[in-house]
Amino acid sequence: MDTIQFCYFLLTLVAGVFALELLVVELKRDLMMLQQNSYRIDRYIKWLRASGDTTAFPRLIAMALFLLSMATFSMDWIVAAAMALFSLVQFIALRRRRYKKPLVFTQRAIRIRAVGALLTLAVILAITLLYKWDNIWYVIAVASVGMYCASHIITIAACWLLSPVERHINRHYYRDAERRLQAMPGLKVIGITGSYGKTSTKHYLETILSEHFDVLMTPGSYNTTMGVIRTVREYLKPYHEVFIVEMGAKQRGDIKEICDLVHPGIGIITAVGEQHLESFKSIENVQATKFELVDSLPAGGLAVLNDDFPYISGRTVENAEAVRYAISASGGADYVATDIVYAPTGTDFTVKGPDGFTLKLHTRLVGECNISNLLAAVIVAIRLGVTAGEISYAVDRIEPVEHRLSMKRTPAGVTIIDDAFNSNPAGSKMALEVLKMMDTGKRIVITPGMIELGDRQNDLNMELGRTIAHCADIAIIVGEYNREALAGGIRAEGILPEGNIMEAATFTHAQQMLSSVVAPGDTVLYENDLPDTFK
Image 1 (tube, rainbow, N blue to C red):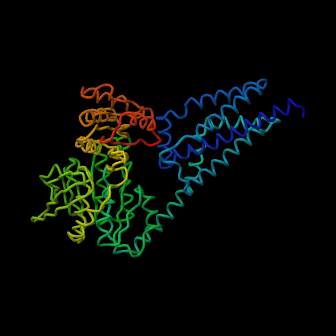
Image 2: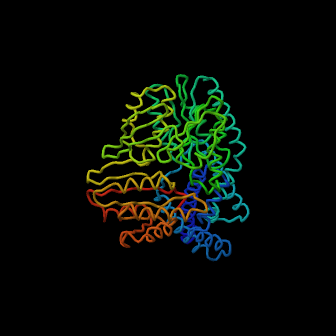
Image 3: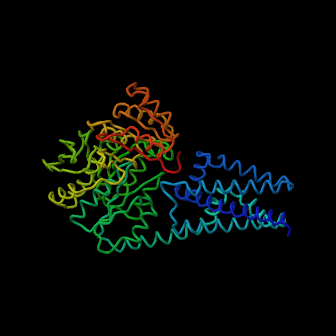
């Protein structure tokens, strides 16, 4: 091998290694996005179409290089060098990128990754045999860059090939969880669902009931059927007396599927609002899905319903006892929260119920939404025999759920209201009302707006912008997705000066903007935080 041949070999070796490394990192990112779309191929394809990921600029460059390598052999040196440079730059960019919800290497993710790797090797081998090129590293470089252009296809194919295996595994897990639950006939199962507020209500109820019972709740955001199954198989013990199950849904039948497994005796619906309209299509479908919980209750069951929402108060319940609660629409409610007083130390309020029932409570929580969620938890606790003293003690020590209207003060004297997990119209409005009550320093909101609102996406974010104009002194709008609607709503009110409406490309950019305007005594509200599937 002469010097020229050696240099060419070295160049193609570098190109092949870098291109293969790039493909591996990209396939990992694709798998992460598939996981964030619940391993649902239809949702993943929908995300691909909406995000434009398949036609992103780096993929177009890769496609051009791949086609160039196919068209001529006289430019192998140039093509190899270009592929090496491109692969290195894009590999570094992907490795440096940070995600809000990185890939979790579950057993399913590992299986998909392994099958994807086998498919990748099969394609490289096929190209090698087909073209019979002498330089294997040039083949690897060309094949890897080509597969980088269509990496989504590899991920989708791996997921599809494994679907029979996953169904078999899931059936086994389901039967095992079912068997464990049937072995505990005395277990009190409480289901909680709602367009929003279910996670907070779950935590509040667990804290209160733990004063009287051994309680298990579904952890984190384990609110799907498989999440509940995992909770039962890994955490449920024979000594548990109460099982609190958070139930989420993206389509009709999701909540019924969970109920058919756990058979709840008590069901709480915290809200029926305009959220996930992207998949539900209409508010009526949201209502029907949430009420799958109530419809599954036995004759002796109890439905605890938030009458502050018209799509709850207007829905009759005949199969079980219904107890209704409210803060605003208290006319037909059995339990109401009254005399609500906000203070730096939290909130004082009074629960009033049937037959002159009265219970005065103090909590460290703030915001009407939190008081409403607490009220639902208190009602269930009363029905299960928890004493007034136990309820009062537990409510007083409840800590805010992270990223759900939690409040803290920094050493620099800035108050932070963290509502980053929120993404619904009612909750966002409540958070802004809390911000409005802050009367020291400037009131600053940082938000990318709300998502998954279907045809009402633009209108509801514009309405959010109008609310921001009345509740904040400075607005920092993050990202591109809702920028036009939010800024348009703020400007339409004509309240905030143009210089107080700021636009940031990313949350990092927003933090830099914040540091230039924030001062001791100010209050900063972080409202909503879009997932990695949105810009």
